[in-house]
Length: 272
Image (cartoon, rainbow, N blue to C red; front, side, top):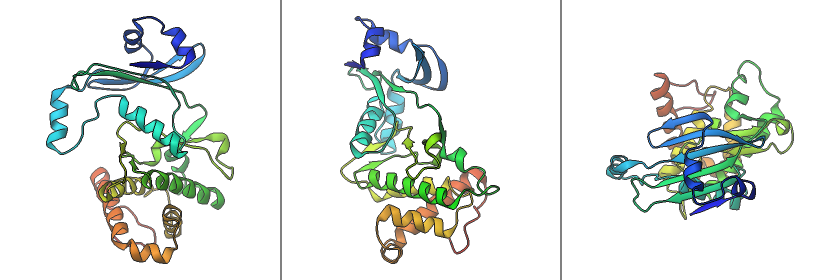
């Protein structure tokens, strides 16, 4: 199967369309065994192209032996983008998608999305906050927006699996507004279910918390996130979710120790 938006259908007309897309050249952003991500330009317009050439049986068996479902190609991200669209979570815009082959080990696929322009990751936005604190209003709104995205995903059976600040792209022009435009990216490993299992909720929120440890957030900022994420009073959250919050903090500290070999500096009033 292959589906292309009108302007790409004209470029890749004919029976060899799939092969021509798999052979696309451009600025390579990531290249791993069996897949490649590149930026490609056509008629002055930028696209990101993710090409999958087959994961092989070794990768499939490795995942199955660790009780994980392997990601076979672009279909997972394609479905994740469609689901985000349904939930009102801004992400990438699909311009083309294709898949061929029945053998899961050598299935080929591609995903083409519009390039997001004039955006900056929240990791870059927040990097200098300890030395140059942001306007309180801007920080408050960004925390609430990230919490709203996390809530929309988790309440509807979606977990990201790479839920870090670097995967939130903010439109630069909207950063100082009452409604900053955030796009969630890197949906390659997203899982879609009727309900997010607790351990995956902990992994998502633990990863997000880990990525905020060094940007100078306070206990009040953390509580603001929880209130927006749960849409409940802080008293009920801190009572009913005490064990969940402890698991999230433990997960975040575990990642920090693994990556930096030390404990993070926690906000005053927060104890591991």
